[in-house]
View (cartoon, rainbow, N blue to C red):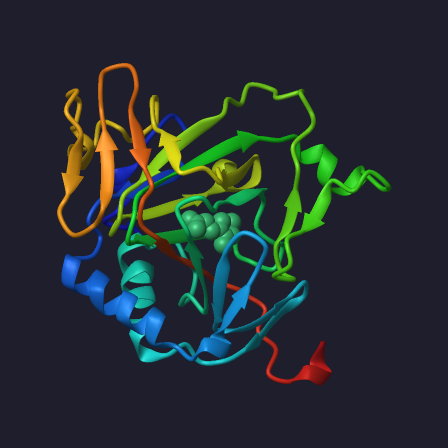
Length: 264
Ligand SMILES: O=C(O)CCC(=O)C(=O)O
Ligand SMILES: [Fe+2]
Protein backbone atom coordinates (compact mmCIF):
# COMPACT_ATOMS: atom_id res chain seq x y z
CA UNK A 1 0.00 0.00 0.00
CA UNK A 2 1.52 3.32 -1.05
CA UNK A 3 0.94 5.92 1.62
CA UNK A 4 0.51 9.59 0.83
CA UNK A 5 2.80 10.47 3.73
CA UNK A 6 5.78 8.98 1.90
CA UNK A 7 6.77 12.42 0.63
CA UNK A 8 7.36 13.56 4.18
CA UNK A 9 10.40 11.49 4.98
CA UNK A 10 13.06 13.43 6.88
CA UNK A 11 16.70 12.77 7.65
CA UNK A 12 18.98 10.05 6.35
CA UNK A 13 17.01 7.05 7.51
CA UNK A 14 14.26 6.07 5.10
CA UNK A 15 12.04 5.37 8.02
CA UNK A 16 11.29 8.65 9.74
CA UNK A 17 8.27 10.56 8.48
CA UNK A 18 7.30 13.99 9.77
CA UNK A 19 4.07 15.61 8.60
CA UNK A 20 3.52 19.14 9.90
CA UNK A 21 -0.10 20.16 10.47
CA UNK A 22 -1.50 16.68 10.14
CA UNK A 23 -4.56 18.01 11.95
CA UNK A 24 -6.13 21.46 12.10
CA UNK A 25 -6.22 23.73 15.14
CA UNK A 26 -9.88 22.94 15.73
CA UNK A 27 -9.21 19.20 15.55
CA UNK A 28 -6.41 19.75 18.04
CA UNK A 29 -8.75 21.62 20.40
CA UNK A 30 -11.34 18.89 20.05
CA UNK A 31 -8.82 16.17 20.90
CA UNK A 32 -7.48 18.12 23.87
CA UNK A 33 -11.06 18.58 25.11
CA UNK A 34 -11.57 14.83 24.91
CA UNK A 35 -8.27 14.04 26.63
CA UNK A 36 -8.96 16.43 29.49
CA UNK A 37 -12.63 15.45 29.58
CA UNK A 38 -11.75 11.83 30.35
CA UNK A 39 -12.48 10.61 33.88
CA UNK A 40 -9.69 11.42 36.33
CA UNK A 41 -9.37 7.69 36.97
CA UNK A 42 -8.26 7.25 33.37
CA UNK A 43 -4.99 9.02 34.17
CA UNK A 44 -2.09 7.05 35.47
CA UNK A 45 0.62 9.13 37.11
CA UNK A 46 4.21 8.16 36.59
CA UNK A 47 7.24 9.80 38.10
CA UNK A 48 7.72 12.19 35.27
CA UNK A 49 4.48 12.37 33.30
CA UNK A 50 0.86 11.24 33.26
CA UNK A 51 -0.69 8.89 30.76
CA UNK A 52 -3.97 7.45 29.58
CA UNK A 53 -4.10 3.98 28.11
CA UNK A 54 -6.70 3.34 25.40
CA UNK A 55 -7.38 0.16 23.49
CA UNK A 56 -6.81 -2.36 26.24
CA UNK A 57 -4.05 -3.84 28.30
CA UNK A 58 -0.80 -4.66 26.53
CA UNK A 59 0.96 -7.76 27.73
CA UNK A 60 4.21 -9.07 26.44
CA UNK A 61 2.29 -11.65 24.47
CA UNK A 62 -0.50 -9.53 23.15
CA UNK A 63 -3.42 -7.24 23.76
CA UNK A 64 -6.42 -7.81 25.94
CA UNK A 65 -8.49 -5.47 23.82
CA UNK A 66 -11.00 -2.78 24.58
CA UNK A 67 -12.66 -0.82 21.81
CA UNK A 68 -11.13 2.58 21.14
CA UNK A 69 -13.65 5.38 21.57
CA UNK A 70 -14.90 7.01 18.32
CA UNK A 71 -12.97 10.24 18.96
CA UNK A 72 -9.78 8.16 18.80
CA UNK A 73 -10.73 5.83 15.94
CA UNK A 74 -11.45 8.91 13.84
CA UNK A 75 -7.81 9.91 14.07
CA UNK A 76 -6.25 6.41 14.10
CA UNK A 77 -8.22 5.45 11.00
CA UNK A 78 -6.85 8.49 9.20
CA UNK A 79 -3.30 7.65 10.24
CA UNK A 80 -3.83 4.05 9.15
CA UNK A 81 -5.17 5.06 5.74
CA UNK A 82 -2.81 7.92 4.97
CA UNK A 83 0.36 6.17 6.09
CA UNK A 84 -0.33 2.81 4.48
CA UNK A 85 2.24 1.46 6.93
CA UNK A 86 0.11 -0.62 9.27
CA UNK A 87 -1.06 -4.09 8.17
CA UNK A 88 -4.35 -3.63 9.99
CA UNK A 89 -6.19 -0.94 11.92
CA UNK A 90 -4.39 0.74 14.83
CA UNK A 91 -5.78 -0.73 18.03
CA UNK A 92 -3.84 0.95 20.80
CA UNK A 93 -3.29 4.58 21.80
CA UNK A 94 -1.18 5.81 24.68
CA UNK A 95 -1.77 9.43 25.59
CA UNK A 96 1.10 11.11 27.40
CA UNK A 97 0.97 14.49 29.08
CA UNK A 98 4.19 16.34 29.80
CA UNK A 99 4.58 19.45 31.90
CA UNK A 100 7.22 21.84 30.54
CA UNK A 101 9.97 20.26 32.62
CA UNK A 102 8.95 16.67 31.99
CA UNK A 103 10.13 14.17 29.43
CA UNK A 104 10.51 10.49 28.80
CA UNK A 105 13.70 8.51 29.28
CA UNK A 106 15.33 7.03 26.22
CA UNK A 107 13.62 3.72 25.60
CA UNK A 108 12.57 1.25 23.01
CA UNK A 109 8.90 0.43 22.73
CA UNK A 110 7.73 -2.92 24.04
CA UNK A 111 7.92 -6.11 21.97
CA UNK A 112 4.16 -6.57 21.71
CA UNK A 113 3.81 -3.70 19.25
CA UNK A 114 4.06 -3.96 15.50
CA UNK A 115 7.26 -1.98 14.77
CA UNK A 116 5.66 1.17 13.40
CA UNK A 117 4.74 4.02 15.71
CA UNK A 118 2.75 7.16 14.90
CA UNK A 119 2.89 10.05 17.35
CA UNK A 120 0.50 12.97 17.10
CA UNK A 121 1.60 16.03 19.06
CA UNK A 122 -0.77 18.49 20.70
CA UNK A 123 -0.37 21.66 22.71
CA UNK A 124 3.29 22.49 22.81
CA UNK A 125 6.40 21.76 20.77
CA UNK A 126 9.15 19.46 21.91
CA UNK A 127 12.30 17.84 20.65
CA UNK A 128 12.54 14.06 20.45
CA UNK A 129 16.03 12.60 20.57
CA UNK A 130 17.00 9.35 18.90
CA UNK A 131 20.03 7.60 20.33
CA UNK A 132 21.58 4.60 18.62
CA UNK A 133 21.93 1.45 20.62
CA UNK A 134 23.37 -1.94 20.03
CA UNK A 135 20.71 -4.53 19.38
CA UNK A 136 23.00 -7.12 20.91
CA UNK A 137 22.61 -5.74 24.36
CA UNK A 138 18.88 -6.23 24.64
CA UNK A 139 18.73 -10.01 25.10
CA UNK A 140 22.19 -10.99 26.22
CA UNK A 141 22.59 -8.87 29.33
CA UNK A 142 21.53 -10.64 32.46
CA UNK A 143 22.29 -8.94 35.74
CA UNK A 144 23.12 -5.48 34.54
CA UNK A 145 19.64 -4.09 34.62
CA UNK A 146 19.78 -2.35 31.32
CA UNK A 147 16.12 -2.83 30.84
CA UNK A 148 14.04 -0.89 33.25
CA UNK A 149 10.38 -0.21 33.51
CA UNK A 150 9.19 3.30 34.11
CA UNK A 151 5.99 2.06 35.63
CA UNK A 152 3.52 1.76 32.79
CA UNK A 153 4.15 -1.97 32.73
CA UNK A 154 4.44 -2.10 29.01
CA UNK A 155 7.50 -0.21 28.01
CA UNK A 156 10.79 -1.74 28.95
CA UNK A 157 13.32 1.05 29.03
CA UNK A 158 16.85 0.52 28.00
CA UNK A 159 19.41 2.93 29.31
CA UNK A 160 22.16 3.44 26.83
CA UNK A 161 25.57 2.91 28.30
CA UNK A 162 27.27 1.18 25.42
CA UNK A 163 29.59 3.47 23.57
CA UNK A 164 29.82 1.16 20.56
CA UNK A 165 27.58 2.91 18.14
CA UNK A 166 28.36 1.34 14.80
CA UNK A 167 27.63 3.79 12.04
CA UNK A 168 24.57 5.16 13.69
CA UNK A 169 24.49 8.73 14.84
CA UNK A 170 22.16 10.39 17.29
CA UNK A 171 19.60 12.67 15.74
CA UNK A 172 16.64 14.68 16.86
CA UNK A 173 13.25 15.68 15.49
CA UNK A 174 11.36 18.83 16.32
CA UNK A 175 7.75 17.94 17.05
CA UNK A 176 5.41 20.87 16.54
CA UNK A 177 1.84 20.80 17.80
CA UNK A 178 -0.54 19.15 15.30
CA UNK A 179 2.31 17.32 13.61
CA UNK A 180 2.49 13.59 13.03
CA UNK A 181 5.74 11.67 13.46
CA UNK A 182 6.03 8.11 12.21
CA UNK A 183 9.07 5.94 12.63
CA UNK A 184 9.74 2.31 11.82
CA UNK A 185 12.38 -0.16 10.67
CA UNK A 186 15.91 0.98 11.63
CA UNK A 187 14.67 4.06 13.40
CA UNK A 188 12.47 1.79 15.50
CA UNK A 189 14.84 -1.09 16.14
CA UNK A 190 18.30 0.51 16.24
CA UNK A 191 17.55 3.61 18.27
CA UNK A 192 16.15 4.55 21.62
CA UNK A 193 13.86 7.56 21.62
CA UNK A 194 13.36 10.02 24.43
CA UNK A 195 12.51 13.58 25.43
CA UNK A 196 14.68 15.62 27.78
CA UNK A 197 13.07 16.70 31.02
CA UNK A 198 14.15 20.30 30.69
CA UNK A 199 12.15 23.45 29.96
CA UNK A 200 14.47 24.45 27.19
CA UNK A 201 14.99 22.24 24.19
CA UNK A 202 17.54 22.88 21.51
CA UNK A 203 16.70 21.88 18.01
CA UNK A 204 19.92 22.80 16.27
CA UNK A 205 20.45 20.15 13.67
CA UNK A 206 17.02 18.60 14.03
CA UNK A 207 16.48 16.56 10.88
CA UNK A 208 13.29 18.45 10.06
CA UNK A 209 14.30 21.98 11.02
CA UNK A 210 13.95 23.11 7.44
CA UNK A 211 10.22 22.58 7.55
CA UNK A 212 8.29 25.80 6.86
CA UNK A 213 6.63 26.01 10.28
CA UNK A 214 10.00 26.38 11.87
CA UNK A 215 11.48 28.99 9.63
CA UNK A 216 12.05 31.32 12.55
CA UNK A 217 15.68 31.74 11.72
CA UNK A 218 15.86 35.24 13.02
CA UNK A 219 17.05 36.62 16.28
CA UNK A 220 13.76 38.02 17.55
CA UNK A 221 11.79 35.86 19.95
CA UNK A 222 8.48 34.75 18.55
CA UNK A 223 5.53 34.26 20.81
CA UNK A 224 2.66 32.23 19.45
CA UNK A 225 -0.52 33.92 20.64
CA UNK A 226 -2.59 31.81 22.99
CA UNK A 227 -0.10 29.03 23.13
CA UNK A 228 2.37 30.62 25.55
CA UNK A 229 5.16 28.92 23.70
CA UNK A 230 8.32 30.63 22.70
CA UNK A 231 10.46 29.61 19.81
CA UNK A 232 13.65 31.56 19.67
CA UNK A 233 15.80 31.21 16.66
CA UNK A 234 19.14 32.31 15.47
CA UNK A 235 21.35 30.63 12.96
CA UNK A 236 23.44 28.92 15.61
CA UNK A 237 21.21 28.50 18.55
CA UNK A 238 17.67 27.34 18.03
CA UNK A 239 15.73 26.73 21.18
CA UNK A 240 12.20 26.10 22.33
CA UNK A 241 11.06 27.38 25.67
CA UNK A 242 8.49 24.87 26.82
CA UNK A 243 6.00 26.94 28.74
CA UNK A 244 2.84 24.92 28.12
CA UNK A 245 1.88 21.27 28.48
CA UNK A 246 2.38 18.86 25.65
CA UNK A 247 -0.02 16.02 25.02
CA UNK A 248 0.91 13.26 22.62
CA UNK A 249 -1.04 10.39 21.14
CA UNK A 250 1.18 7.38 20.53
CA UNK A 251 -0.74 5.21 18.08
CA UNK A 252 0.30 1.61 17.59
CA UNK A 253 -0.88 -1.79 16.54
CA UNK A 254 -0.69 -4.93 18.62
CA UNK A 255 -1.06 -7.79 16.16
CA UNK A 256 -1.82 -10.47 18.71
CA UNK A 257 -5.22 -9.81 20.18
CA UNK A 258 -6.60 -12.10 22.84
CA UNK A 259 -10.32 -12.42 23.09
CA UNK A 260 -10.22 -13.68 26.63
CA UNK A 261 -7.81 -13.95 29.48
CA UNK A 262 -7.62 -17.74 29.38
CA UNK A 263 -6.08 -17.82 25.94
CA UNK A 264 -2.82 -16.24 27.17
O1 LIG B 1 5.29 11.53 23.85
C1 LIG B 1 5.95 11.14 22.91
O2 LIG B 1 6.11 11.83 21.91
C2 LIG B 1 6.65 9.81 22.97
C3 LIG B 1 5.91 8.78 23.73
C4 LIG B 1 6.57 7.43 23.64
O3 LIG B 1 7.66 7.28 23.20
C5 LIG B 1 5.84 6.24 24.10
O4 LIG B 1 4.74 6.37 24.63
O5 LIG B 1 6.38 5.13 23.94
FE1 LIG C 1 8.15 5.22 22.91
